[in-house]
Image (cartoon, rainbow, N blue to C red):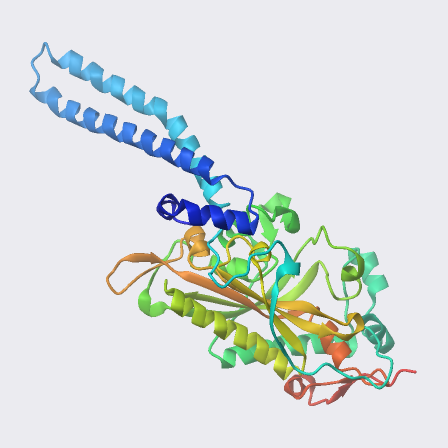
Length: 425
């Protein structure tokens, strides 16, 4: 959420952000409601001042003057009360509109409509050159008996997954490796819930706008978050931190749930896009300084790249264009990892800097060195998400006999094994 004063003073920049991000909101209408609200507040304040002054006159008034003054006080009270519904309605309308106003993208962000307009920054790693016909993720899993898509679909419906044996151990090894890696870089590990109150999704910026992707528990007024960013972002909601408490850097692991209502085709085969998954999320609260925020952005990006390098996976980094970066983002890079069976890179990480847009919604504030209350800046990036990362991991590290090479970084979490699985005919 942007400060209303900023919007008043920078209406042109905000309108440009609305245009390039493709957000359906009329800034002129928002400013009209804001002006009307200011006028209403001024009228109420003027009448309250008059009422207070009138009340001070009553004790000093003559018996003849007193009834008139008392009646005037009552009339003013009624007028003030009569304006209250309009005042509350304008406040509510303005709040709802402010929640939809996008953040201003960084000057480096390319203007574009969707992910087709994202800009590749660089490629890292070497693509595998197989001397055999490589299998895809499903063939590898089923060949080893590590999955059972048919049975789990009978239990949980489509886009569910079940891993067995060494496949399950591999998934847990990847999660533990990512958590240990980030802890070693100073990120406080958190194991958190995916159950959240609806207001936490407003705080994080997922609402309004992404309601159709979220599972709702109707009887409990709870929802299932699609990332640990949601609960972690609200841990300090409404609190006043001190400057010396910042930055706060977390690596949070949780279940994650997404309805993925619009996805179809190859995306829903195997482990690519499932409704329930597990995710390690990097999340940072830092001081309200863009330079510091951008430094943290590079840190989060570097962590994710180091994890992929340790997993010996080729990937590329792309800068998201304005139309593919989300309303709240100042800057966003995706990391896409190579999937041999599709001969393409698939998004596995999203690194985002949100300035104070998220913090204003959440009430994330701290007192700076001068004692002034300031909204913090927030950032997030994937650490690792399973089972999706298993798709490039299995496919890039497969061997001719269907077994899987284990990157050295994962071996301590798999009993030292360098190879998983048995030869498949």
